[in-house]
Image (cartoon, rainbow, N blue to C red; front, side, top):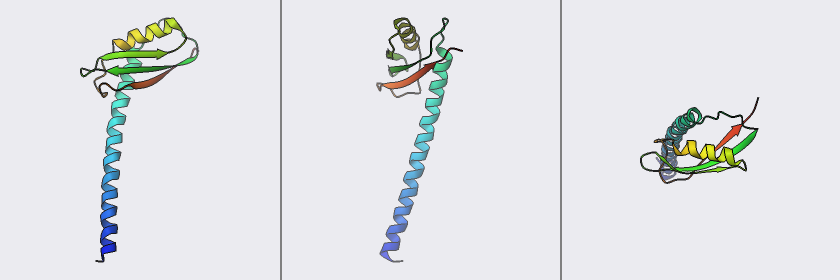
Length: 110
């Protein structure tokens, strides 16, 4: 086997290993995010109708999974207060702690 063939085979093996590693890491994080999104969708409830709008929510969690910071970006003060109150009561253990997470809620009236 020539040195060039050996380098090519080694590079190919390293590339496949890295691809497998990142593919597994992405699928694990995807499952965590899907579970977190499901928890949020099931927990956030509004009794009064909300007009069509998008609201970006920034939040962080502590080491126990409790939401310790929430910021809802909307001009509707009542909606902002309701979202922030409900988010502050969430328990999201699957997320990294002390990292700002972002989610966008789309409200549509039918």
